[in-house]
Image 1 (cartoon, rainbow, N blue to C red):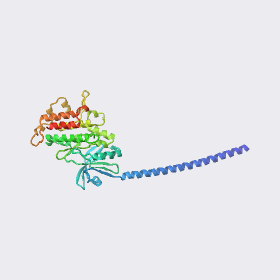
Image 2 (tube, rainbow, N blue to C red):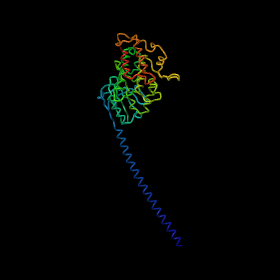
Image 3 (cartoon, one colour):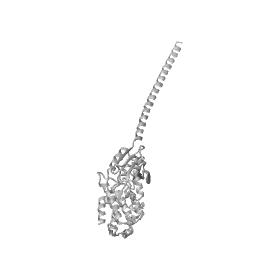
Image 4 (cartoon, rainbow, N blue to C red):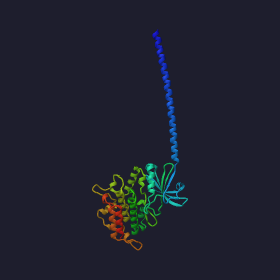
Length: 361
């Protein structure tokens, strides 16, 4: 009987202790959960506040020549799309207050590099000035991470249009020479005019803009510096598809001064022949990688078949720079040297300029 009372007492005490432990556990659990949720709410509020701060942030960097720009001008300007790519869109826009036409390049947020690197690069590119480079006038950062680069607008379009229009001006040797020399001078400034060489990486006739006097301006200089690696590779692939990519870049390695020289050589041949540099992949028995019209030259086609005959016929009083077939041959040989399949055999930009000066003599 006594044992039964002891058993009941032990069971009762055990149940009571267990109940107390259970109540304490539930209490502590609820306290911890409440504290965690409170901390989480504070974190969410702080995060939302940071996001609101970011969303509200707008900025406009202004550089030489863009002193009249305002955010309202840029956002309210009626624009016409004149070019698209995987990494952005190019607009021709009329700024209402100043009544000036500008080029606005919209960069997709997902394609640009990190913000801290981007600001540094923009400041660097905004300081570059040369008579043959398209200047950066302003850079706008929007509340949703939109990014717009502001450039001057050139009414004669790009070099591709100039060559394809065949309006007679493209056959004048003075224009061909002026454009070639100007592109080389602009590229020289990129390669040698800064503390470190700036590689263009996307040099092609569509990125050469012309004013009313057919003075050339290289656009998109240093654009790859603003893009993330994926977008930069896509830009290289686009250039390759149009016939301007050097053979060493087949495996999508980094662009270099030598690959810029290759692209320059293709542009010179394009100016001379008036033909489009459509890229064709070499057959296994070929050790060079050239656009189709260049291969014919390598295979022994006559030099007279590689430039438009009107170039010589136009050598009249309206051409300030005389031309002969010998001059054209020198020009062609320089272009082919730039397009050498071996990067080490290509001339550097200063050698290209020296050869062009000899062509003019």
